[in-house]
Image 1 (spheres, helix red, strand yellow):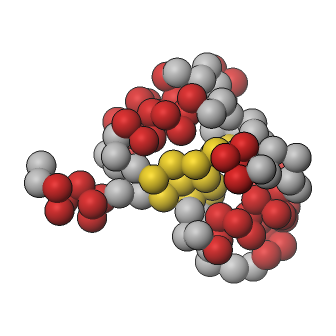
Image 2 (cartoon, rainbow, N blue to C red):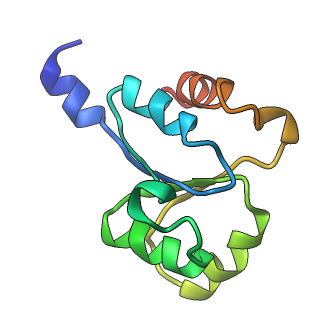
Image 3 (cartoon, rainbow, N blue to C red):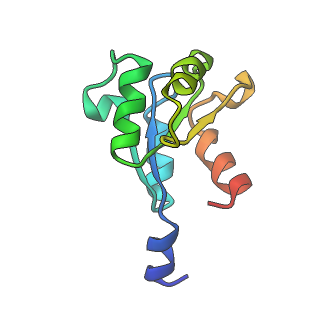
Length: 106
């Protein structure tokens, strides 16, 4: 795959505290722009603050926090996009990104 194709497919993610920062390492190793809320000093931020940051940077929020749905719906805006891992069996920190990237074809 050419460098140009990789750049075109590069996706921006913001991973919240419900998932390990190691998840971001996997995203970055797949040439995506990944950040964890800890990278932004948002570890103690509210869900709404994380959503605002994700929208401002056009990042997809990745979380295992089911409580985030309410503030996301209340925003009534197109951004940010949101990926929710609901199955506890997907929570081990190392396999997440590999499974996610393979299944989603990102």
